Length: 500
Ligand SMILES: Cc1ncc(COP(=O)(O)O)c(C=O)c1O
Image 1: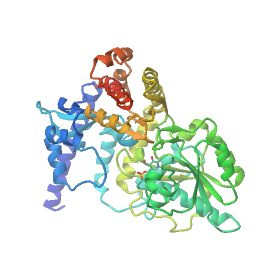
Image 2 (image 1 turned 120 degrees about the vertical axis):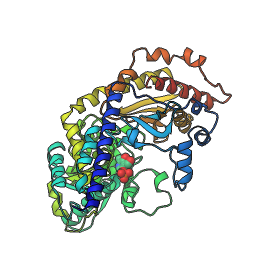
Image 3 (image 1 turned 90 degrees about the horizontal axis):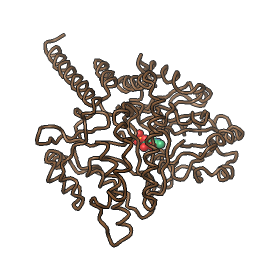
Image 4 (image 1 turned 60 degrees about the vertical axis):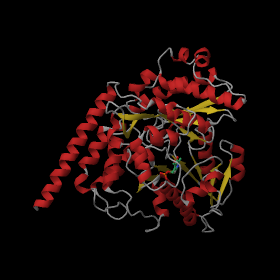
């Protein structure tokens, strides 16, 4: 080894050891309950825009944002600091007067991607251990490595039986694209007319933003301006009669999310997935499950389809699979390999060693920590808490719904959900909106007990009582909508104060 190489290696080793130590320290503090939401009080001044508040009170974030080019799309105007984030507590680069990082509580696990929260030691360790070979360009579709092979073996073990072929990609949209291509190609190979036919998908569905996945997406706001897109027939989600009417000899498959995530956290009605299975099987077409958001334990089973004891022919996975490292997978039944001529799929970086190492660590934690049972229990607690909130504010909250740790508080039409979200951000709590009116809760699956003990304090409802809310900073406005909005905000602020 040259001297330069030795120096570089030693410097990298020192940094890696220091960062692992910090991750362990942070996790200890988090487990001891001493990591809290920490945002400047001035941020809660809901009368001013968040950008102005950041400019005044979070100077490091503001400077970083100014130095960067303007983002193309909206994002929270702060600079996160991944080195100091832990579990659901995301640090930013600004420090409080005592030198501690300011932190937000992320109730969305970075949009259901950090299954175990940020800086989970097992994942960080796995990534660091793979450092000596991560800068290689092996991808499993051309060059399988010991890691991509181990990943496929782990997926075979964990994913429900009958789905033993895998194609590893980089994102959810890519996994969906490949699933659709496989099913169309299967029809080309097996039907007398040699045509791919088309896919049935659902109104409100979200399958990604690449053109094929976008075609299957059932929300105009993502598609407007990008037509015409390849042939997909959309029918109302949960409407079996509409599905039956859409079925015909040209249908190559039905693509469905077991819980529509972006569509508003809408679980499939009871029996719906089983009926789709029966319909596709009897019609000789295929069932495609988009489990990009619901998979990897989010709903209390490895795949949400398992709740209904239904096996799809093709499953798309991504998001939580990589524990923060980009990876996706199409998992399909064996017979589909015959439908895929060489070169019909490919991915330059799919199955690379870094992503494979991270995904292996995720599956290992999921299998060995008894997490799935915990998810069911915590999901139940979260659901009860949200239901209590809903019953206290019937004029504001239309309903609650979800499965496992993918839950939503659905606000009534006329309540400005975006303002509620911004107001929560100012209190240090991050949530996303799905389907226009649903406040989506998708917290990390792991270690949830550490904060749910606080979250589910028995006397929470007293603190959220109408009397206390009225005596708080409730702004009564002339308009009914503003009144509803302020009630909701205060209710949620109160709810979130228990989380700190
Ligand atoms: C159900 C579903 N499918 C596909 C996707 C697209 O995934 P990605 O953003 O990784 O391409 C998403 C992303 O939110 C999703 O929720």
